[in-house]
Length: 211
Image 1: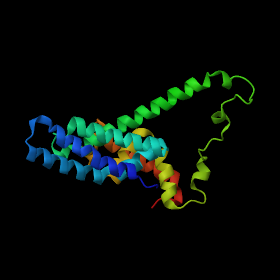
Image 2: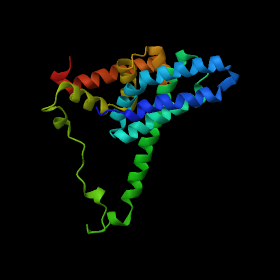
Image 3: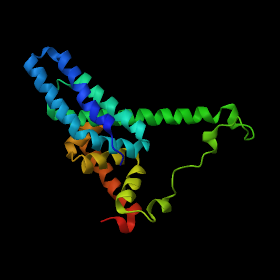
Image 4: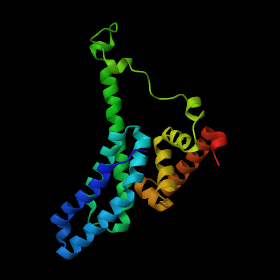
């Protein structure tokens, strides 16, 4: 996975804003304590959050944008919440941002399909992106010749959105069922169902790679 220096900067740049604003009428001492706690929290989750976003979006810059936006919203809107609530709040914000980006891609794809250069013969004015090969590998190519780490990442990326969210929050981030339910905005029973189906899907997809 590529390094994410921009994320590291975000964790330190957002916190001074929270300190300066002193949300909720906090005293300077309380604001400083909150800022330090936020800084530690963001530094702790940033790389795992980037991995989650990258698996969902399959684009490094979009993943960075999603994580940074989630960090910014958490600091601006929820800095005064108890620290125990930050993790599920952050991941709920992140998943909403990921869905927003995915919806924008779908809309853009539909609009591009109706553009004039997509209707005629390919010429010098045609869209070069349209002629580019599809980068998505087939289901067999995803596993053949790859090590287990890469195969797992590919399989996770193909999970349905809610299954992927439940699996990553439980397995990667280590949230319990109640925290995952809060982050996903659903019941604990739904979390268990999504997680169980994700595990079964991964077993089916990974075959001999699954342990």
